Structures are given as C-alpha cells and as structure tokens.
Image 1 (cartoon, each protein chain N blue to C red):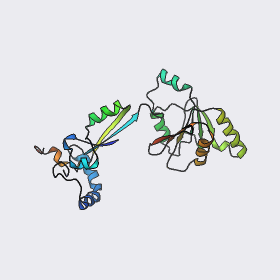
Image 2 (image 1 turned 45 degrees about the horizontal axis):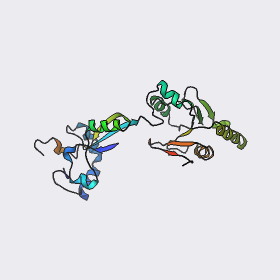
Image 3 (image 1 turned 135 degrees about the vertical axis):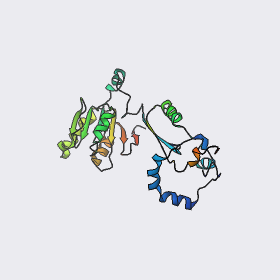
Image 4 (image 1 turned 90 degrees about the horizontal axis):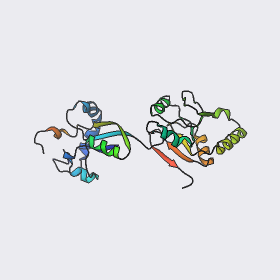
Amino acid sequence: MAGRILRRTTLGRLQMKVFDRFVWLWRRLDPLLPWPPTSIIAIGRSRNALLFPAPPTRATRILVGGERLALPDRGSDPGRPQELRRADLRGPDHLLSRNPEGFTPHNTRIYRVTDYRTPEQRRRLFAELKQNRYAILGMLCSAEPIMTKWKWALAARLPVKVFVLNENGDYFWLDWAT
Amino acid sequence: MLVPHGQEIYGTLDKVLGHYRRYSGPELQAKMEQAGFRVIRILGFNRISRPDGTWPGAF
C-alpha cells in the first residue's frame, strides 16, 4: 500500500514501530487473511548438492563410487540421522564420530573417536586416514562445540577438499589447493 | 529463498529496496527448477501489509 498507492519511498518510524510491536498478532492473522501475500518463500534442494543428490540411479552410484567421503560427527541432534535418510544421502565410505548410534548407513566403516584417546593412537589414525586418500571430507556442524578439535585437525592434516554444512543448512567448501 | 510476491503491486518502495521484479509462486518455482533446484514447498506470508490486493478496482 505504501509503495503502490501512496507512492512512498520510505516507511515512517512510527509505522515500523507499530508493525514490529504487533508481529505476534500478524503471525496469527496471516494464515486467516484471504488475499495474496506480499512475500513468498520457496524451499528447495539443489539437484547438484553433495548432501542432497537426486534419487540414486545406477549411473549416479557409479559416478560417486570411486570417491570417498569422511563425515566427522553428526552433532547431538537426534533428528539429524532421520533427516539424512530422508534426504537420501549417499552413505559415506567412512564415518568418524563420537556417538554414531542411530546412524546406520550401508557399507560405512565407523571410526569412534573414543577409541583414539592417546596421542599415539591419534597419530596412527591420522596416518591411516591420510592413506585413504579421501576425495571429500564432509563436516556436519551443529550449533554445539562437538568434536571441534577433531574437525579442525582433520581439515588441517588431510589433503582433501572439505565440505562444511552448518546448523542453518548453509554450506561452503574449503580447499587448500585453491 | 525469500522473494517479493505479486508484480501487480510493484511500486516505489520496491525500486528503493532494489527489487527489479516481484514473483508469482509458479514463476518462482519454474525459475528455481531451471536453476537446478527441486522445489519442495512454497509459502506465502506478510498478508497484513497488502490489504489493497483484493480491493476491486484498486489499480
């Protein structure tokens, strides 16, 4: 109304304050109002994103079969494994986790960090992971500081492209080669 | 993805805010699919600021 009918280019401070004050009311009224919305939100998944691939086909499986994906930790969010299964996540070849219960991917080797408590054990683990020559290191971050040192240590020591997915669903790549 | 809805109410505020256009649901869905996304859901909101949208002869 302000822009189309009144031809305004700004919204008044008082108008904004009143609007903000009654957001709780607008939220309740919004689904009841019969006219079209001012904004729309579209929720979608990239067909090309690593964690949200298209439904697996023979060709897709062959394409990623040669790659190895290590996922250090899934966070303590109990809902996440379900989300991952619903998203039809291709199971990682290897999983490094503190608490992998509930995550039941097929053909995934699980490394439990509790099995590597001493510096010597961790040194051997890193050497083994390095030998695995991963193509991608996937890092699922919850809003909690879980396995932070492990994540950074892996990202720093493994010659691998790192895929980081945070609790908001934002993701980015870390690649030492570029 | 959040976008302004309804090209018919494109106005001066849109220009100031840097909007080049406003979208309809089907239009946004088509563009997202063209860009490689599978659209799961489209939600409309903020109806309170658009009561003029249904007034007969408003535009």
